[in-house]
Length: 500
Ligand code: NAD
Image 1 (tube, rainbow, N blue to C red):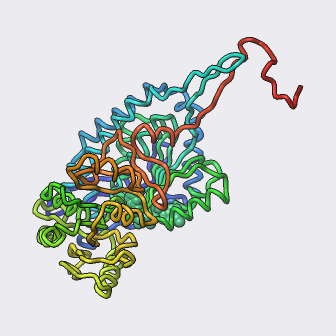
Image 2: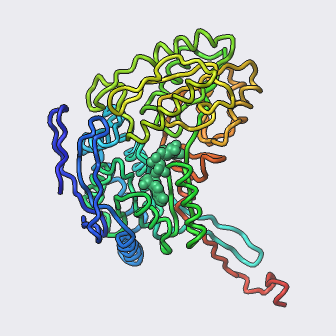
Image 3: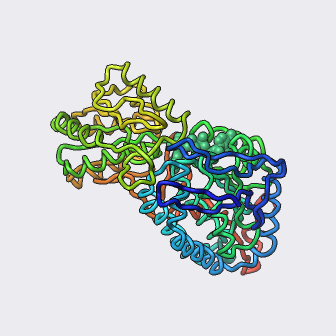
């Protein structure tokens, strides 16, 4: 056990385990390796935790296999649902601790962790708790009898999670995986692992059988790679960057063809038509690129505004975005927490430098602030092929441009290798339907941005990846379909002709 002491927010102290969570026990890494996690707002050391290597991944896989052969195999679907409900109840009880650990470790505003991430995780746990005993197959007529499909668990599965909303994204994977009857190994992000240690303690308290959920903190190139290459892990659900996604697909191809789903980056277009409710559009477009410092895969980072409202919109957008209060994410007045790491900080500033050297017009921001902070920044009149219009920055940097016609802006929106998320602002219902259908993304919001619901699938097209978290669709990702055929008439009429 180690204690996380948080000063400045009522001097909170939270005990967390420092070990890997394997077979319902907290254990040191076999090699003794550790990782340190720091508070990105202050740079202060928060904790030293065990860091998993290949041997630890092997041990977790053995525990998961053993559970699948015994206790987990005999846990009924309603029993799986009850465990998820119990975990949701514990999340409700310990919401403050979960939110605070995520906020202090990942630099996420405590208000966002408290009012968005933890409640959303609870909503998703309850949603899939309800599904656990409803994952049914189909009855199918065939000429000599009947067939039915079984939707079976895949077996030992894994989830690799990024740092930008780690609790919520972990639960997007854990809840459907468990509802479907799989055993799971979770590799949390090394930059903010504390939430996962608390999650492990709650999994234990909820009464999950040993080996069903294993949580291995560690580095991507060690624990992550060992998971990706493991011959007995049959499915890997990944959320993170495109380069890592590429490595994971290669690792699958080079090993056991494990089923891989990839939730990768984005460069989301937000389109403001002249008939939109401008006040509403300003609210959501501003939020869409500044929330969580733009460190959101679905960030509305490309903002297209109709020429007839462009100048006024841009002026007001800039006024509102520049208002941020940077500081400690645990403090109630802070509206802008730190960037997760110095590497990410440097990456964002290099994109801002690139923007400044282009023909785009800097509206506000662009400054390097003290510490790990970046000012909200926006560029107007950004060219279609400018780097800041093309590449995912994962920072609070808006690229704004004007458009004239609907077909032109749909073309601009789709002129991207990414296809995760888009937002449309219009009061013309026909236009909303037309444009939503034409945009090449996994989700489109009309007159809002970034809303998440447990029953709506989330994921991308093109280089934003494939597979879906949430919704009934996620259950397809965590099950395999087997068909069983009964020859009821006892005929040989449909024997394959080659055997006659
Ligand atoms: P990342 O790819 O660097 O890391 C994500 C996870 O992968 C971490 O747990 C890391 O340890 C692990 N990892 C890194 N290298 C690995 C390797 N060689 N083998 C196995 N695992 C490895 O991404 P990040 O910087 O943590 O997250 C930011 C990226 O995630 C952005 O591009 C963002 O768009 C994307 N993202 C996508 C979604 C989505 O749902 N589509 C959501 C959040 C973030």
